[in-house]
Length: 350
Image (cartoon, rainbow, N blue to C red; front, side, top):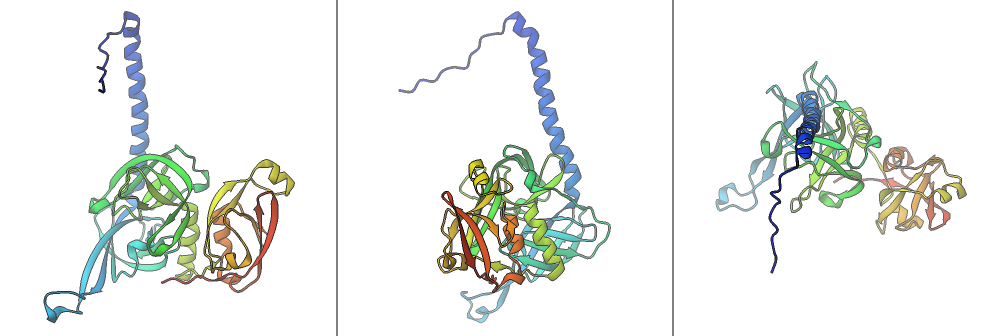
């Protein structure tokens, strides 16, 4: 039989009682400091956070009324986004605006503006849309390379249509891989316990200085406190290319990667700069990397002449220019350095 111990009801001694108010004030100061940090971030960033409403046209396939069978119907949805330039450029998730017939951005001041899709990249789940307006409040983009596990983060968005909702938590883990719709794998995502719900997708994850360090993309519905955001360094690279070309032609290797630390003896022995590499966490059996001979567990340290220390390092090199070109990949396999000649193919988006 399980016994339940009562909460102690002993009273403090006189000396403890003298320290009580001081301890209480200290606790209040700590709580106040935390509250002030969150409030300042919200005041700085929330004017740049927008609600995104989308409309899709879908055909009715099964209905009781034969006359309406095959006709189009409108399906609506919503998500979040954040203004990152004063002239109306908004970053959000690709899955929020994918194949949308119409996009509307609801600004923090209540204005509803029609938005145009500038470009979308499902492989990082990032899209850029734009509204026709000037002098808009815009958020400051930070540096996701400086993120540390345990640091305070604040998520802003519009879950279930509740506009300007704020949650706070910490960075739970770094370097995660997340498989999204269609089986695509997004590498190097941020895991956080800041509560996210449907509608938060595309909203910002912010540090205590009010800098955007990630774009919220997913949560695990049957779990609590397991949510994911795309690092802002990946977002900046993707958004810049979408704004320039409207789409991204990307070379494809067929691997899922994870950033790992390389032991110092290996760094010295192989004369490597830096401290990290990209470990092959998964491998598509018929893709270029597998055909070249790479295996799961190999740690990629060089791509052509470039040193590889992060997923972003590799993504930046997988451009249209190297499609069909022979590239040498250098990797660490156990204690040995191995090289592979790989010919990247064009990544196709469906």
